[in-house]
Amino acid sequence: MKKYLIAILLLLWGAVGVEAGTENDLLPIEKFPVPKKIDNLLFYIQRDPNTNTICYALNYNSDNKVDEKEPVRVFWIRYPEGGQLKDLNYIQRKFAYGITSKKVAPDQYDVRSVAYSKLPLILKKDKTNQFQVYTSINQIECVVERIFIRIDGGTLWSPNVLFIELKGTDPLTGQKQVQRFKPS
Image 1: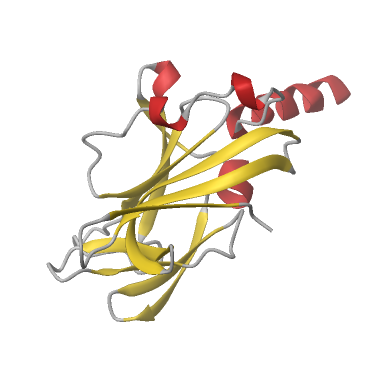
Image 2: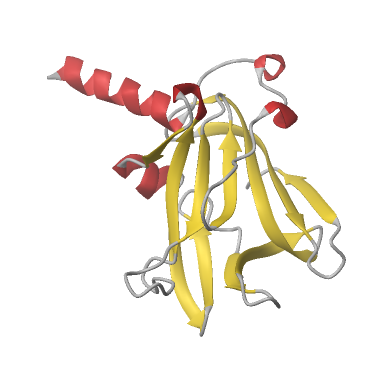
């Protein structure tokens, strides 16, 4: 029984993506692939130690309206496995890459990461009536494009996060904004 538990934990460890290494061993951010042709993609998260990407896409119900209970669908692009799309497993959804959402107004949702709920993300319509996710980047409300998490070792439940990088666009000027911070 203990052998099986250890094997399961090792499988989850690899799936969550925490491995020991040195910062010099880590892939430069610009070398990570950019998701293409993903329907209704809002933003994506990438992190060390591999190029697997977590995608956050608008989730429609059977009436072709945004699902109010679960407005964002979360899934993997497994680039090392030929770019397969896969659902998150229970641990990933509940403790690492999943989100919670709460409707705060018509067509507006407070969306939070289960792993780092301090970062407010707001899902709302833009001036062209398309849903986007917004957050403050460099004290400017921006449309989120990518979140990158630089991880260097640590454990499954407590990875050593060196920084989180937010990348987005200022909807008023079209300028790209990038901000890094160390989570507290």
